[in-house]
Length: 198
Image 1: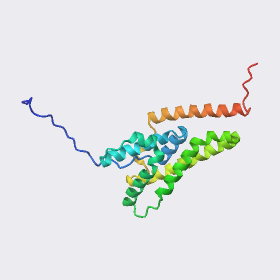
Image 2 (image 1 turned 30 degrees about the horizontal axis):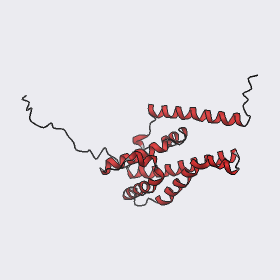
Image 3 (image 1 turned 120 degrees about the vertical axis):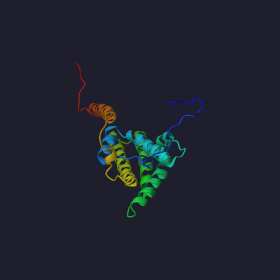
Image 4 (image 1 turned 45 degrees about the vertical axis):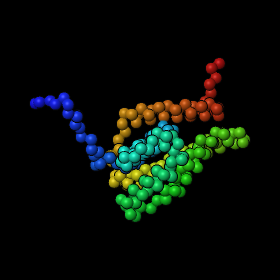
C-alpha cells in the first residue's frame, strides 16, 4: 500500500440522521425517578439534553447550556418546537405548549422564591407545602412535555432511554442523601427527633 504524504486525510463526516433525534427521549418512570430523587435538579439537565439534541438535529448554533440554566426564558420556544414536531408525527395530538410553558415559568419562579415568604409571616408548614406543590406541578408539566417529545421522536414509551444507568444511580443516591438531610432537619426543627446528648 502506497501512502501519499501530500493527500488530505479522509474521513466520513456525514451526519447519520437515523441516529439523531430532534429531542431528548426518556421513559416516564425514569423521568419521575430522576426528577424527584434529585430534588428537581434533573430539570436543568433535562432542558440541556433537549436543546442539545435539537441543536444537533437542526445543525444550528444555539447554545444548550445557557438555555438550560435560564430555562424560564426558553421554555416557550422549546415547548412550541416539541409540539410542532409532535403534531407532524401525530395529527391528533392535543397539547397546548403555551399554557404548559407558562405554568412551568410561574411555578419554577414560585419554587425559587418560596423561601422568601417567611419574611411575610408565613409559617414553615405553609412554606414547605407551597414548595412541594411547586415541585410537583413543575414535574408534571415537564413530564407532559416529555411525553410529547417522545411522540415527536417516534418513541412514545421512551424505550430508547428507559434503563437506569450507573450515572443515574449516582445522582439519585446524592439526591436521596440530600432528602435524608432535609427530612432530618425538619424532624429536629419540629421536635420529632431529639438531639439531647446530655
